[in-house]
Amino acid sequence: MKIPLATCLLMSTIVTAEVEETVPSQNTYKDISKSMSVSVKKRRFLNLMLPPINRVHKELQEQFIQIKNDILAGVNKKEIQKLKKIYKVESDEDLLYALKPHPKSIVLAQAAIESAWATSRFFIQANNVFGVWSTHPSQNRLAAAQKRGDRTIWVRKYYSLEEAVREYYKMIARGDSYFDLRMYRYNSDDPCLIIQGLDKYSERGYEYVNIISTVIRHNNFTKYDK
Image (tube, rainbow, N blue to C red; front, side):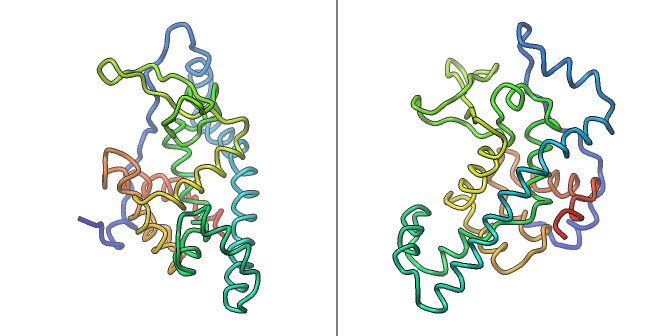
């Protein structure tokens, strides 16, 4: 069941970001987390994450505006068809849904949650900000400490934080699970509405949506949307 916007806006419980299970022989990330106060940890997180998020968001927003204008003018058709193949869509409308980036406040909140404020092992060893799993051996990747039965869990390894942010936006733009989010963000810039489409990002479902809402509100992340 979807959360009413009024309820979403009133959520105020302070949420502690999750940290992956530690590996005894690889405790650098654990030491970093322990050595910093909460305020220092959050400042460090913003210093690391705001520059790549700002760059990628600006680039995607400019592309979205350009392609929207091109569609309206009936020009640049070859590039439009190329983008439709990349984003696996057929209609102009679905392409615009895919291309419009969602607010930076949402990206920051998810990055904080998934990377434990930039202190997780996945963040430090793999630039993996958003807890993205690897689905193929050909991908640059890192083994997680935990297993599911006998199955090793792998996460993507990125060359830079900017690459991680770019791939995160691309995953949201192409994944079937995020169609509602794409529709919401095309028609609105309200983070509280848009995050309703992230209920499938985590196994926690709408509890995860609640957590994102709380992190955005508690840290005043919407100021970065302006």
